[in-house]
Amino acid sequence: MRRLSWLRSLSARVVLLNTGITIGLSGLMILVLCWLAEGFMQEHLDDTVLDEIRILEAEFGVDGRRGVQMLISRRLTENPDGRQAYLLVNEDGQWLAGNLPAMPKQAASRAGWYELPTLHRAADATLRLRIVRLIDGSRLAVGFDNHEIIAFVNALQRATSLGFAVTVLLGLLAGALSSRMTLGNLDIINHTAVRIIDGDLGQRVPLRGSHDEFDRLSATLNEMLDRIGELMASVKHATDSIAHDLRSPLARMRNRIEMARLAAPIDPAAQQDLLDELCSEVDRVLTVFASLLRLATIESGVLRSGFQRIDLRPLVDDAVSLYEALASERDISVSLSIGLPATDGGAVDGDRDLLFQAVCNLLDNAVKFSPDGAAIAVTLEQVQGQLQIAVRDQGPGVPAEQRERVFDRLVRLDTSRNSPGYGLGLSLVRGIARLHRGDARLFDGAPGTLAVLTLPPAA
Image (cartoon, rainbow, N blue to C red; front, side):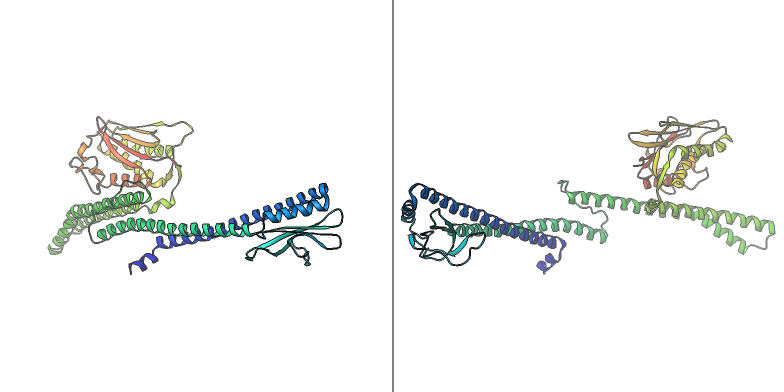
């Protein structure tokens, strides 16, 4: 069953496919190699026959027919194995010298070449023969057989076949080892996933330190699991916060309704006041739920599909202009400083409404917690390749140990309990920032608080 499971795996199919391709290419390479080698040696054999004919023709020019006969006899004496063939006949076709009984009668093939059975007693080759006419009318035939070519090609085929077999075996072995390593890495990831499914949410895929594709995949999965853990912790915290913050208004609403139900008939004015108070409590609950739903939508990342290229310069300017009027009621000044070149609008890829809301939330907090007559400074600049929107107020500030906690849902510090709000403003700011691949953080404003929204510039 394990073997069948391996054969059904993707890595096994990839190994078999690669092995099949290797076999096909290797076989084709062997065929081409043998064909080229045989063709080269055949040309060399033909050149040898032609060279021998030229030698005999030169001998005829020196010593005539008798010289050719003597040279042929010497050649046959030196090579009596029948691998070479000679024949010299006069103009009437009478035999004069050689080891061929007569001239071949079939028509010449392959551009004037004759192919005859070899004279060697083991008929394992073909004789390549060429016939020429000498000046005196006699005819000369010279031929060599291709025994050496056949032997060489056979040896080459045996060697390449052995190499081919070794290549296939090594390919299969390397593929199996590679597949085993791949399946081993996948088994580790799968085992970790199963344990997480079983409820052990603290499990993480172990890293081997090799920095290969599987290590990078494991690191990405671990980051994803960490992010999921953060979201689950945030949801749990939000649930606890909702239970804590909404219990009181809901309890007050129920008590008022119960008191109104049990009390004697009340006058219309008191009844109207009760209804107004109940509507206010309901509106507060609905506002909190709407903000939580919006924050959940932002953190899900689905809004990225609608991102467009926008400029931060006019966006920040509009937000500052909006809050200047509200701040002026308490004699608070709001100044804007842009540290970008005049031609640089601070372009980012994002959602304008969401980014505008994030800047407005920072300004709203700054105005809310600044004393009368204070000054709020807003800056837009590029720092270390990132666009940065900073809002500095002169309020009471946030303790260092609380600067991360205030970004959680429905968290309100003791210093802000008497201020209007639901503790979701900074949560929305960070959610919007991270939706845009950025971040939001608080620093000591010395005095007050410095809120910084960082965003990556448009690509």
